[in-house]
Amino acid sequence: MLVLERFFPPFKLRLGNPGDAEALLQVHQRAILVLGRRIYSDAQVESWASGNTAERYVSAMREDGEIFEVAVARKGRIVAFCSRKEAEIRSLYVDPDWARHGIGRLLLKRAEMAITEAGHGSISIGASLVGLPFYESQGYRVLRHRHWKTRGGLFIPAAEMEKNVHASAHRQSEN
Image (cartoon, rainbow, N blue to C red; front, side):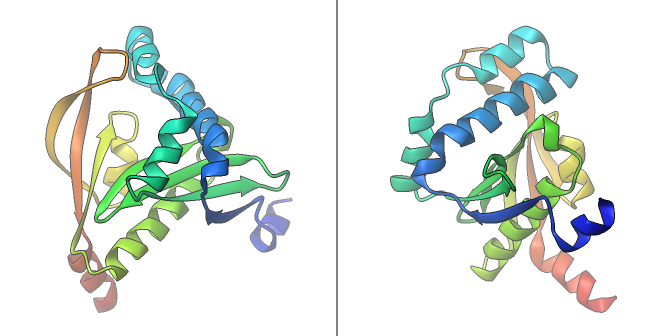
């Protein structure tokens, strides 16, 4: 099966749309509730996951100008998404059943490429401690650690991160 997946990946990528809102919510919630428990307490995870709604994604797309890209499994189920606005990655979540298959990395690279093509020299992201090692492995550096207030009212440790894309693009062209 692995050889076939090189030619026929188990998912395809497309732009997200308001009709995806419920599926985005499901991926987001599962990622927080399952993967978040690796780092945060049950109370922190529950607070982080609380109060999110499908309408939030619709509003982000229609009113805030966020661009979403989604990974869709062969059976039509959204299994991951990444959103961006200007020079910021706003969110990147992968369903736990699909984690560690390269989908998050692919979505991140595509968002980085779009941000770079738009003329931005650096990319920022607010990362949970769950995502911190992943972003560091992709060339992001911590600007500062902070506490982020969840929708449920609790504070969780997080980090503001940045990647200088002009410098990394220059290093790649030298190799």
